[in-house]
Length: 205
Image 1: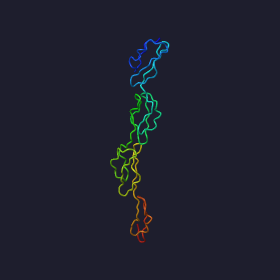
Image 2: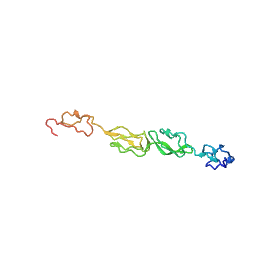
Image 3: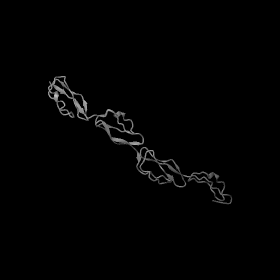
Image 4: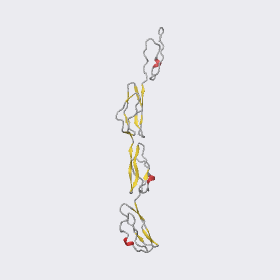
């Protein structure tokens, strides 16, 4: 016969007191304290109690977090196991996602921000109030007179800025230079280009 049932961690105190002096094959129910999960009961076998356990519950289901990626591989994790948190584009993990007493705690997916001001764009007027915008947001940018904006100033998924260009305007008019030949070929030339000038007869450059 089996004597008194030994104390089991996290079991209800005294719950096995009536199981003393049981015959081999007898089952003694295990009662766990609140917040703990029962694994088996006590069984008398050849004069020794085969003990059940009261364990801290794990997390049978995967974490359910807003803006998270696929976390299905974390289902069935044990207490204090860590799940590698992946987030959707434009979001980044903060904290450590850990199974604690049957629930997932400690982390979330937050929107990525561009925390610093954007770099200087040549030919542009320095923008204001851009720092702190979220991924996908744009910040208004204005080019200086004589320049045209190409693209937009946008906060990227990685928290950095994608910068546009301020393109210097082309010369749309035909230059007016007294005593020259035909200068129509100079129309539309890009900024910085050089237009050759031929002087009219009797004039020199």
